[in-house]
Image 1: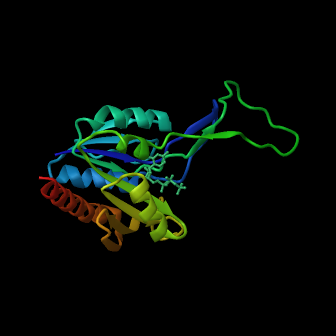
Image 2 (image 1 turned 120 degrees about the vertical axis):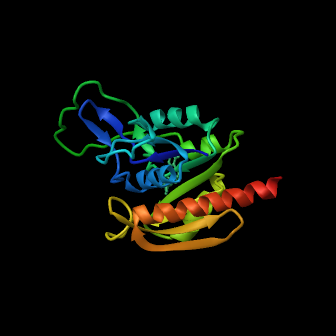
Length: 217
Ligand code: CTP
């Protein structure tokens, strides 16, 4: 089976030396890619800038901005069976890129930002045949927000994680996942190493995809 996994943060440049980004390490997405490779699936890993090595055997597409990630996902969507959108994509980009390093202002300074494209929401509204797994990074009202994202972004399955905790989530080796299925079911994967959770999640994804295909046929 062909997997496309996005991982890590995106970066939106302000000037040649500064950017907007987030704390995503890429560990969860890389662990999912590794778990799929262990089971002999083909994996394209579309990665934002991270400091960890890619798993051997993956086709790696390195991107920086949300637009580059959008183009990479769009280019692989047609030939993909399972899309896992684990990347922490910046929601905003500077309204203007300044080609020279911005000079410090003598007082308060505010930055004009414009929304980036929502990769998941825009690509899943197009015809495609792949099983779509979204992620949700939450600091509050995790269940309500995740259930909304599952619906609004047209995912087959959504994996929520609490990014307000220091012991799990962004940049940690561990995570705790709450999985939302399109039929309303939910399942919790308790705190464990991201590498272990990725293997359990892979089984859940493949099982849900199988049920989804059986229902359609
Ligand atoms: N996502 C995306 N494109 C964006 C923003 C998010 O494809 N521009 C995807 C993420 O990869 C993830 C899902 O949408 O699979 C949810 O991302 P999350 O950051 O939790 O939510 P947002 O939609 O960005 O909403 P908010 O930041 O308000 O929680």
